[in-house]
Image (cartoon, rainbow, N blue to C red; front, side):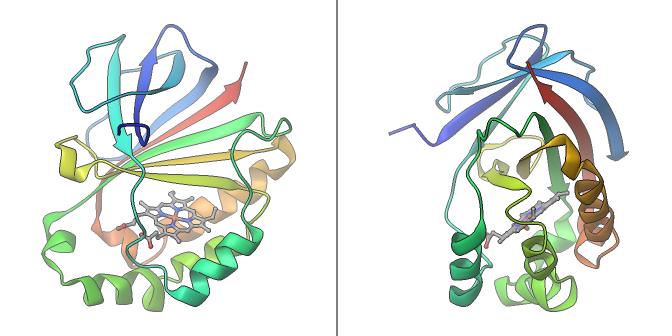
Length: 182
Ligand code: HEM
């Protein structure tokens, strides 16, 4: 079954128009005008300018109570009013990956309050996390968000808050791609 594997394809065609591409830290990726997201498999494809694969996986850090809170208020993707999106591919450094799971959880939530902070922005911001470290991609995660234009400022505030955390000290590559639905 490969219905949980997706290709994020940057190029000259797609349902999302790229309005901004900013390298936050690390190497940039090639500028592209459009993005399409297609169901795929693990085979390498060389479509358009770049393709990054990501897969939907199980949660690692969220605890039972947090999972329940998220489930209770989070919104699904594809709401018609959500014409804005952000694709933020992220890679964390070796120091992060060398930590034990419990040490990472402490940094992620106890110190950085990632979930606690994120919850304040639901359901305005719809989110989906894709993993790509274990399939040999240049990034560890593809983070995807959809929101209505009136929540753009809230989204900026959330991104700024997260980038200011202990967790982000371990981020060695981050590209911030903003898009609008065509
Ligand atoms: C919209 C509000 C947000 C909520 C509610 C939220 C919630 C979460 C949760 C629950 C996880 C952990 C999943 C697990 O247990 O494995 C997670 C992981 C992650 N989130 Fe967020 N998040 C939000 C916004 C963001 C933003 C804006 C970014 C990027 C700028 C981001 C980047 C990530 C990354 C990279 C991971 C993976 C961390 C890792 O496994 O090391 N999140 N998020």
